[in-house]
Image 1 (tube, one colour):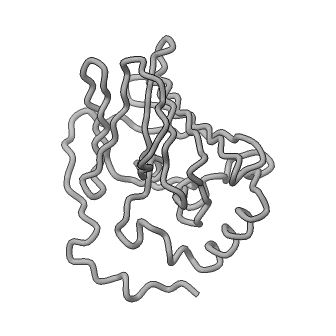
Image 2 (cartoon, helix red, strand yellow; image 1 turned 90 degrees about the horizontal axis):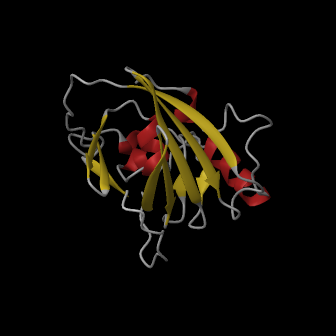
Image 3 (cartoon, one colour; image 1 turned 180 degrees about the vertical axis):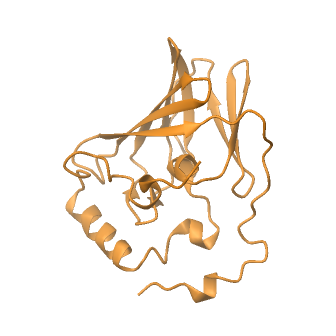
Length: 195
Protein backbone atom coordinates (compact mmCIF):
# COMPACT_ATOMS: atom_id res chain seq x y z
CA UNK A 1 0.00 0.00 0.00
CA UNK A 2 1.49 3.38 -0.94
CA UNK A 3 1.60 6.17 1.62
CA UNK A 4 -1.54 8.26 1.18
CA UNK A 5 -2.39 11.77 2.28
CA UNK A 6 -4.06 10.28 5.37
CA UNK A 7 -0.67 9.18 6.76
CA UNK A 8 0.34 12.83 7.18
CA UNK A 9 -3.08 14.51 7.55
CA UNK A 10 -5.96 12.19 8.44
CA UNK A 11 -8.50 14.94 7.73
CA UNK A 12 -7.26 16.03 4.30
CA UNK A 13 -10.42 14.77 2.57
CA UNK A 14 -12.94 15.85 5.21
CA UNK A 15 -15.13 18.55 3.68
CA UNK A 16 -14.64 21.75 5.67
CA UNK A 17 -11.75 20.20 7.64
CA UNK A 18 -11.82 18.36 10.92
CA UNK A 19 -14.30 19.80 13.48
CA UNK A 20 -11.62 20.34 16.14
CA UNK A 21 -12.29 21.67 19.62
CA UNK A 22 -10.16 24.83 20.21
CA UNK A 23 -7.60 23.02 22.43
CA UNK A 24 -7.26 20.22 19.86
CA UNK A 25 -6.74 22.73 17.03
CA UNK A 26 -4.01 24.45 19.07
CA UNK A 27 -2.17 21.21 19.87
CA UNK A 28 -2.42 20.05 16.24
CA UNK A 29 -0.96 23.37 15.07
CA UNK A 30 1.91 23.07 17.57
CA UNK A 31 2.67 19.45 16.64
CA UNK A 32 2.57 20.22 12.91
CA UNK A 33 4.93 23.18 13.35
CA UNK A 34 7.34 20.88 15.22
CA UNK A 35 7.41 18.47 12.24
CA UNK A 36 5.88 15.71 14.36
CA UNK A 37 9.06 15.27 16.40
CA UNK A 38 7.07 13.85 19.31
CA UNK A 39 5.06 11.43 17.15
CA UNK A 40 4.78 8.27 19.28
CA UNK A 41 5.59 6.02 16.30
CA UNK A 42 8.81 7.96 15.69
CA UNK A 43 9.83 6.86 19.18
CA UNK A 44 8.82 3.25 18.44
CA UNK A 45 5.60 3.32 20.48
CA UNK A 46 2.40 1.82 19.07
CA UNK A 47 0.46 4.07 16.74
CA UNK A 48 -3.03 2.69 17.23
CA UNK A 49 -5.66 1.58 14.74
CA UNK A 50 -5.58 4.52 12.30
CA UNK A 51 -1.79 4.24 12.03
CA UNK A 52 -2.14 0.56 11.16
CA UNK A 53 -4.60 1.49 8.38
CA UNK A 54 -2.50 4.34 6.90
CA UNK A 55 1.10 3.11 7.22
CA UNK A 56 2.36 1.23 4.14
CA UNK A 57 3.04 -2.04 5.94
CA UNK A 58 1.10 -5.24 5.39
CA UNK A 59 -1.59 -6.64 7.67
CA UNK A 60 -3.02 -10.15 7.75
CA UNK A 61 -6.58 -10.96 8.79
CA UNK A 62 -7.13 -14.27 10.58
CA UNK A 63 -10.74 -15.19 11.25
CA UNK A 64 -11.94 -17.95 13.56
CA UNK A 65 -15.41 -18.37 15.09
CA UNK A 66 -16.07 -15.39 17.38
CA UNK A 67 -12.78 -13.60 16.69
CA UNK A 68 -10.94 -11.70 13.97
CA UNK A 69 -7.24 -11.10 14.61
CA UNK A 70 -5.36 -8.52 12.55
CA UNK A 71 -1.60 -9.01 12.51
CA UNK A 72 0.56 -6.10 11.35
CA UNK A 73 4.21 -5.96 10.35
CA UNK A 74 4.98 -2.90 12.50
CA UNK A 75 6.60 -4.12 15.71
CA UNK A 76 4.77 -7.44 15.29
CA UNK A 77 1.56 -5.79 16.52
CA UNK A 78 -1.86 -7.38 16.64
CA UNK A 79 -5.47 -6.41 17.16
CA UNK A 80 -8.42 -8.48 18.39
CA UNK A 81 -11.96 -7.90 17.11
CA UNK A 82 -14.54 -10.02 18.92
CA UNK A 83 -17.31 -11.13 16.55
CA UNK A 84 -19.46 -13.08 19.02
CA UNK A 85 -22.01 -10.28 19.58
CA UNK A 86 -20.53 -9.19 22.91
CA UNK A 87 -21.21 -5.59 23.98
CA UNK A 88 -18.40 -3.11 24.48
CA UNK A 89 -17.41 -3.24 28.16
CA UNK A 90 -16.48 -0.44 30.54
CA UNK A 91 -12.70 -0.22 30.22
CA UNK A 92 -10.50 -0.08 33.31
CA UNK A 93 -7.20 -0.41 31.47
CA UNK A 94 -7.16 1.55 28.19
CA UNK A 95 -4.89 0.50 25.33
CA UNK A 96 -3.50 1.80 22.03
CA UNK A 97 -5.93 -0.31 19.97
CA UNK A 98 -8.84 -0.20 22.42
CA UNK A 99 -11.45 -2.93 22.75
CA UNK A 100 -13.26 -3.93 19.56
CA UNK A 101 -16.54 -5.73 18.93
CA UNK A 102 -17.78 -6.42 15.41
CA UNK A 103 -20.77 -7.78 13.53
CA UNK A 104 -21.72 -8.34 9.91
CA UNK A 105 -24.23 -6.18 8.02
CA UNK A 106 -24.52 -7.96 4.68
CA UNK A 107 -21.05 -7.93 3.09
CA UNK A 108 -19.70 -5.30 5.51
CA UNK A 109 -17.94 -5.97 8.81
CA UNK A 110 -18.91 -3.19 11.25
CA UNK A 111 -16.48 -2.79 14.15
CA UNK A 112 -17.00 -0.50 17.17
CA UNK A 113 -14.04 0.29 19.40
CA UNK A 114 -13.69 2.15 22.71
CA UNK A 115 -11.18 2.04 25.56
CA UNK A 116 -8.35 3.95 23.91
CA UNK A 117 -5.39 5.40 25.76
CA UNK A 118 -5.50 9.18 25.98
CA UNK A 119 -3.17 11.10 23.67
CA UNK A 120 -3.11 8.89 20.57
CA UNK A 121 -1.94 10.61 17.37
CA UNK A 122 -4.09 9.84 14.33
CA UNK A 123 -1.48 10.93 11.78
CA UNK A 124 2.05 12.26 11.32
CA UNK A 125 0.89 15.84 11.93
CA UNK A 126 -0.39 14.93 15.39
CA UNK A 127 -4.17 15.03 15.01
CA UNK A 128 -5.33 14.10 18.54
CA UNK A 129 -7.70 11.44 19.81
CA UNK A 130 -8.70 11.12 23.47
CA UNK A 131 -9.81 8.36 25.80
CA UNK A 132 -13.44 9.43 25.16
CA UNK A 133 -13.29 8.32 21.52
CA UNK A 134 -15.53 5.75 19.92
CA UNK A 135 -14.35 4.53 16.53
CA UNK A 136 -16.63 2.77 14.07
CA UNK A 137 -15.02 0.99 11.13
CA UNK A 138 -16.86 -0.50 8.16
CA UNK A 139 -14.72 -3.05 6.25
CA UNK A 140 -16.03 -3.99 2.80
CA UNK A 141 -14.31 -6.00 0.12
CA UNK A 142 -15.05 -4.06 -3.07
CA UNK A 143 -13.70 -6.73 -5.42
CA UNK A 144 -11.06 -9.46 -5.53
CA UNK A 145 -8.15 -7.06 -4.99
CA UNK A 146 -9.55 -4.09 -3.07
CA UNK A 147 -10.99 -3.39 0.36
CA UNK A 148 -12.66 -0.18 1.49
CA UNK A 149 -12.53 0.89 5.14
CA UNK A 150 -14.86 3.68 6.26
CA UNK A 151 -13.88 5.07 9.66
CA UNK A 152 -15.97 7.36 11.86
CA UNK A 153 -14.42 9.03 14.91
CA UNK A 154 -16.82 10.23 17.62
CA UNK A 155 -14.73 11.98 20.28
CA UNK A 156 -16.53 14.88 21.97
CA UNK A 157 -13.43 15.83 23.99
CA UNK A 158 -11.41 16.60 20.84
CA UNK A 159 -14.07 17.32 18.18
CA UNK A 160 -17.30 19.29 17.97
CA UNK A 161 -18.95 16.58 15.83
CA UNK A 162 -18.21 13.05 14.59
CA UNK A 163 -16.32 12.82 11.29
CA UNK A 164 -15.73 10.11 8.70
CA UNK A 165 -12.98 9.15 6.26
CA UNK A 166 -12.69 6.40 3.64
CA UNK A 167 -9.50 4.44 3.01
CA UNK A 168 -8.86 2.08 0.11
CA UNK A 169 -6.55 -0.89 0.51
CA UNK A 170 -5.11 -3.41 -1.91
CA UNK A 171 -5.60 -7.04 -0.95
CA UNK A 172 -2.42 -9.05 -1.52
CA UNK A 173 -3.12 -12.75 -1.15
CA UNK A 174 0.23 -14.21 -2.17
CA UNK A 175 2.59 -12.68 0.39
CA UNK A 176 3.74 -13.25 3.95
CA UNK A 177 4.27 -10.73 6.73
CA UNK A 178 7.84 -9.63 7.44
CA UNK A 179 9.06 -8.29 10.77
CA UNK A 180 9.56 -4.56 10.98
CA UNK A 181 10.97 -3.83 14.42
CA UNK A 182 11.29 -0.09 14.94
CA UNK A 183 14.15 -0.23 17.43
CA UNK A 184 16.25 -2.70 15.47
CA UNK A 185 19.45 -0.81 14.58
CA UNK A 186 17.67 2.51 15.27
CA UNK A 187 20.01 5.47 14.84
CA UNK A 188 17.67 8.29 13.83
CA UNK A 189 15.85 9.25 17.04
CA UNK A 190 18.70 11.50 18.33
CA UNK A 191 18.68 13.38 15.00
CA UNK A 192 14.99 14.30 14.84
CA UNK A 193 14.46 17.70 13.27
CA UNK A 194 11.56 19.09 15.28
CA UNK A 195 11.61 22.71 16.35
